Image 1 (cartoon, one colour):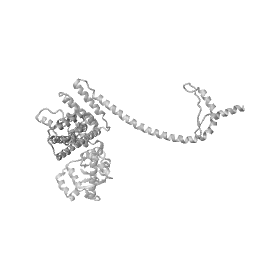
Image 2 (tube, rainbow, N blue to C red):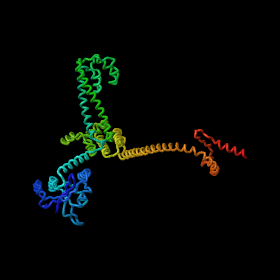
Image 3 (tube, rainbow, N blue to C red):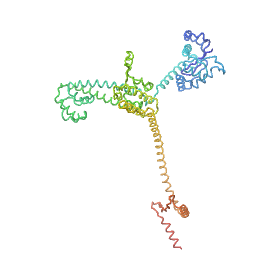
Image 4 (cartoon, helix red, strand yellow):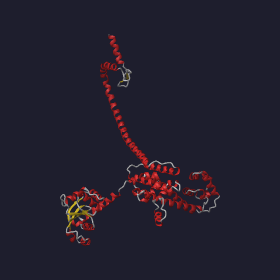
Length: 534
């Protein structure tokens, strides 16, 4: 049976024919020895056909298709044109060796061409890859290297491409930095308390918050200069006037030692660093909240931004978290305890990172495990909705949170919760209503714009028509007199309006070119003249 080799290079598809390769003599070691020598390898493998790619975009598309195990139309046409044709009802007397088994299976399914991918074929393709530039004379080695480099960069860029607004890597880095900042701020604040405590030890008992303590240490400087005039400024920092008075009184009767000005400068600089770190921590938390609302809004509304971000960072990405079952998500973060329990045959942990959620803290000790299992189930649903849904909404997360609240009430008070099917139906209805409102708002805005444009155009036309009609009013008066009796007859025949009320004639006001209003005086004068003539 003849053997053909399909080789996918960066410049195009190539088909090689391997001569003298019987099934009995397929020795991989002999092939490995013959690969190095081009003369020996060239006698065994010869080029049959080569189809170059039309452009770099075409090469990228073909490379993506091969990596995903898909046979494109170009590859199918190339194989059907260059391989021997098989008669209907008969088996093929050849086979095609491919490097990717998935591509080979699809080729055999679609075109009925037998394909194989084994160690022997891979060794032959390795030799083809080594001497590929020698088989195609028109192709230079530098051209092949450039094509490989360009295709490698474009393929890597295509694989790394993502939606900028839904980057879970930024959330992972932000939560790591947030945890690191918390540790650093705590350790630095303790150092400020200890350092400034030599000079003003009573301040530690009055002020408990680290951020406020650092601000007061920077403001007070030397306690001996503190007086009642500083109470308003201290009250602004502390937020309580009584505490500010206590600080001033404690400074007067302090037991602390005196510090030199140079030491005070160093304490102030270090306190300023702690203040800056605390303020940056607040900004980073706000950034994390906004990113979580873009990436995982339902998970954030269900369990909170910080706990949701920790789950995503521990899983590696939002996609990995969505792939995790609820049982895995429940103990995520407690792997050491799990394996220790399995090793010692003890009790497995009930919760991992989910323990930081407020729901488990509110549950009784008896129901903490149940609550963790139920919450993990809802978190798994929310993460899958966030990962695979196209619309960015928090409706599902809010409904799932309501379910968790109802479950807490069920454990505490015995109130029966709603069914999951009913809750999801209500969530879907609310989402469809929101989408319908958005769609209705956009055409309404467009129609308003069109109306305003139409009104402006009508106004311009009316201004032009008024000037044109002023000259033709006198000519229309005579015609109006002739048509008026006929109109009176029709009104009498109709009997007035549809409601049965007779129509009242209104005197028409006409404008002169000078802007004066004319009443129907001319018609009255003409009537008087006709009576006098009679």
